Image (cartoon, rainbow, N blue to C red):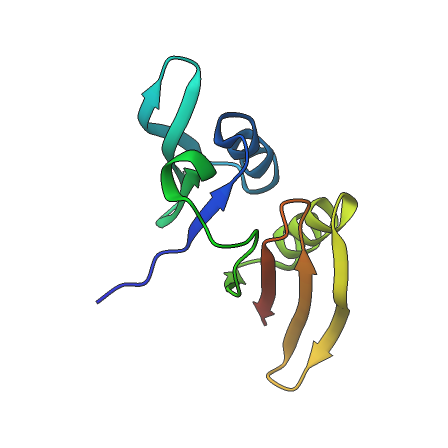
Length: 121
């Protein structure tokens, strides 16, 4: 069994590029109609983030009540991702030394997606 984050956005076409600038990786458009991208995946290493446009997924409210837990492999990548998400978002919990000998932070990005960022030393 595998859990994959599924993120619903206004304007999936542009917003998936926002996440690509943060995480890197390769965008795979799965479904589009004209200029509107309904579904896309972002492949970063062995991780896949799934995205859908609000026109396709029809969420009840923006952000729903889901947090995406992201375990990041290096401290450099951790600090980069944290900075990029916080730049246009909101820091819920600033970076702190966690009891598991690593770093933890919680950031809500500009699309109101809440990310729990972790780095284990």
